[in-house]
Structures are given as C-alpha cells and as structure tokens.
Length: 170
Image (cartoon, rainbow, N blue to C red):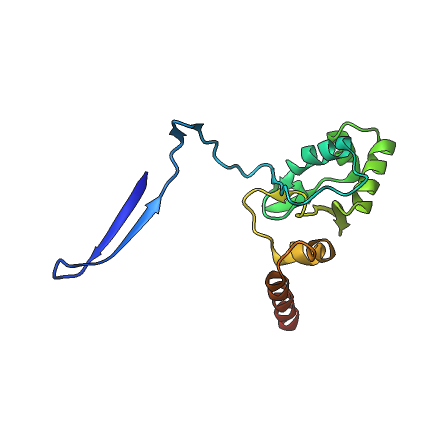
C-alpha cells in the first residue's frame, strides 16, 4: 500500500511528487506483528560475554522486557516519573532467592550487561536495547567503554562532541 502526494502549481503543471510506502498488516506472507514499546532489540553480531550462561541470558531476556522505553532502565513509569526496580524486586521477578539473586546481579554487573547508576539499573544497549530506540547520548556516556568497539568512529566522535557542548552549556 502507498500514499502518493502531488504538488501542482497554479497553472496545473505538476512540480513535485512524493510516494510513501506502508507495510500492510496482512499479506500472502502472513500477519505482520506491530512493534510494541515493550521488549528489547538484540543484535546477532554481538555475542554475550564469555562466562554468561544460557540461564543468565534467559533471566536477562526476562528483565529486558521491563526496560522503560528510550532509557534502558529496569523500571516503570509512575506519574511521569521513572521508578527503578530495586535489587529485591529484580530477584523476585527472575524467581531467585535474595542470596542467589544478588549473586546474579553482581555477575551481570561484572559482565557489564547491567550497570547501577544512582539507584537505577541500566541495561547495556549492546546486548539489549529498548525497542525502536536510538542510542542516546546518556546511554553512550554510561556504556562508552563497552560500545566503543562496536560503534563506527564517526558516531563516537559525534557523541564526544555532543557531550562537550552539553558540558560547556552547564
């Protein structure tokens, strides 16, 4: 399906034309699920850290569905604010006792899959990224050491310039 827009001058002569393509929900190939705000995008060219078990990957996949859109924070929105899950809540969500849950969280921090910053648990966007999200300057700053090896040089340069401008304005 597509939408065609034609621009015609006062003399009736076409001067411009644009065409927008829309993906149909149902085709011969089947139904196209719409993208939702819930969930995460994974990148097949990026492997999980060595030592991270399939069980750990499963638990992180479960947690990745709880990321607040556009932030990669494990939490939820409440009255226009972001509330981060605490360690006890994360342990409960993944079905582990407090002792085993804290060991899991420490391992994920050690593997640099999550990072705790100011009582917020951020998920490394290299492994799980909020659906439909662009990498923000804030996420780049939080995970720059992990992201520098996978991002193009021009992106890193642009982020560094943005950070300098932002720092200068403060």
